[in-house]
Length: 88
Image (cartoon, rainbow, N blue to C red):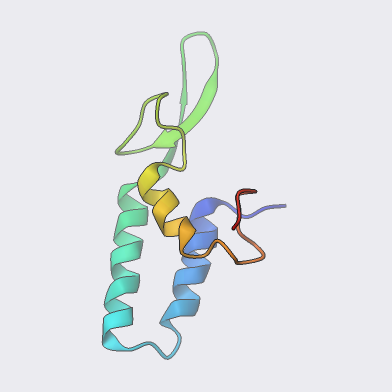
């Protein structure tokens, strides 16, 4: 079973924090704030179609992960547990 995008990013951020400098700790906090703000939400359209979208970007033209979360994911594109099949 693949882990969720949020769980994957949280795990990578935690790894980055191990023995991190103050700047890296600040970067980790910023990544967490972005991830929290751009959380995945589930919505159902009137005809029963279920989609996930970003809490901020939202809408059917911006499926999850949004561009912002996609940028966070790109940092870890070579990780073997990357949740998207579009790994580098």
